[in-house]
Image (tube, rainbow, N blue to C red):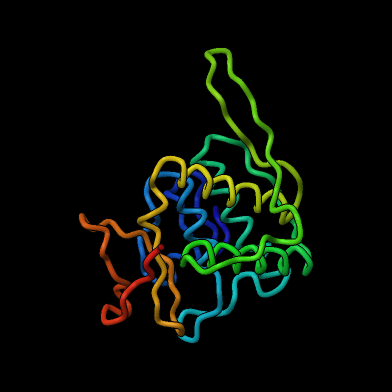
Length: 192
């Protein structure tokens, strides 16, 4: 029996931040983590900042780590986040907002996360986030951004230009000119 709000282990991943906007998670795989992470900010109609304090951040992180680990075929860590971890994640979210919208950014003052790189017996390379708390999440999130940029799948990730919304969605339109369905009259961000 599952607790209220807890999903069965064999269920389809449910990304809390993205779900509250009614968007589908970015396909395939790990980009859904990045999208969900960017959709954690407070919204007047959609709810509080899911990274606003240690309790909110821990609840979001437990769900996100479980979903991402299932998608990547890895064992998920137990993440107990502090208020400092939540603040570092909010800082990372702001940096990724700037990356996504093409605004000039100053490099962060601290490491965004670390990962272990492994070479398999068939010569395949793999990576896995390391560390604890926000560092593990930072590595998973930034690793997915790097993979997405390398594979050319980052461009369809967009954010609503409406400053009161700023929802992140995956543009699956043929010409990559999709708009936020919550604010269709507001054009989406264009990367330079």
